[in-house]
Amino acid sequence: MDCREIIDHKTYPLDEVGNSLREQTIDQVRADLVEDGCAVIRHFISEAGLQQLLSEANDRKAQAYYSPKKMCNIYLGDADPELPDDHPRNIFIPRTNGFVTADLLGEDTAAYQLYYWQPLLRFLADCLGKRELFIYEDPVSNMIINVGGPGEQFNWHFDTNEFTITMLLNPASSGGHFEYVPALRSQDDECYDEVKKVLDGDRSRVKRLALNAGDLQFFLGRFSLHQVTENTGDEDRLLLIMSFTEKPGMVGNAVRVKDLYGKITEVHEMDRVRSDGLID
Ligand SMILES: O=C(O)CCC(=O)C(=O)O
Ligand SMILES: [Fe+2]
Image 1 (tube, rainbow, N blue to C red):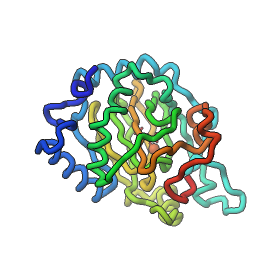
Image 2: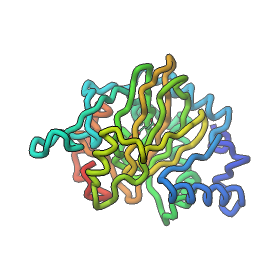
Image 3: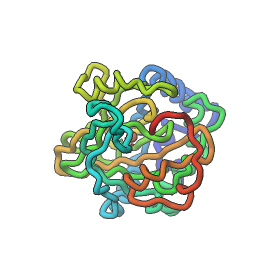
């Protein structure tokens, strides 16, 4: 399928640099990102594109990996016995969703085609005001499907990579809400006190996003804490996730990748390119 058919190309002509529709969309995304680290492009995917992406997801969801480790801290890492029990690193909450990993979404899929479509990369770089943006090179987790079945949830967490776009393919009929706290930490400060408040139930900075199938969500998940609430409906919530980085050659932390996605490759054993010094 041609990428121009996967998206609503009439409204979002991403490959036509200079087209005023493209430039207007970029301006809107930029303004929204500055305001709260999140932007939504409504009905980005075409009807035909959505059917295709959804059928790819449905065909693979039985192969989703469900980690046996169900209790996670927000860094999706280990506890620290040196710190008090109520420190954010030592607070564990349930994460029960599954993932269809990148290796199951081969070259013949529309999801793959779109992820590697150069005009998309250029468009995203323009939205972020970056000279260049790169594909996240993690072969297990750079483009994945989050499967949130009935009763499942994804705990509060930060992402490893800087920029993520997600496309909701099938919403939960009830629950399964994406919630986030914009810019809760920064590149050089974990902001544990503010993080702790959210974990203690303070909702004053929490935002909830209403998404429809086919919307594209643009998100700075490295600094904005986020979660997906329990799916209380009876259908799977399916969401396609594509990740990008500012530096080339970035892959995930081997321990985290193995925990979340159930496998690692030889690239995970090498020294990692890191974007900052945050825990993860
Ligand atoms: O399912 C979502 O909306 C978010 C998924 C997510 O945060 C992640 O996979 O890191
Ligand atoms: Fe995330």
